[in-house]
Picture 1 (cartoon, rainbow, N blue to C red):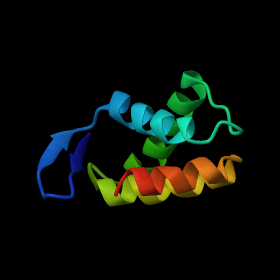
Picture 2: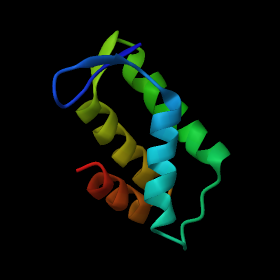
Picture 3: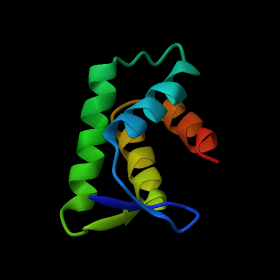
Picture 4: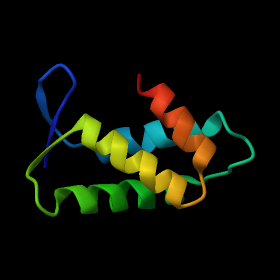
Length: 87
């Protein structure tokens, strides 16, 4: 799968980068503990939903979908930190 970056470059999707960014945002919120396994499941769930109809997706689509999923799964503060971390 391919990702269109903010600068317009197209790269291959790297699940480790998404998992790392989720965990980095979560580290800022000690009361919302998250394991690496949970972060990996969240990343998989987001990407499964986005790639069902698309071969190339944007980082903005990933960001919006992950924000919504984090909130839905009970990580609202992590979601806020993720959005701020990605800016």
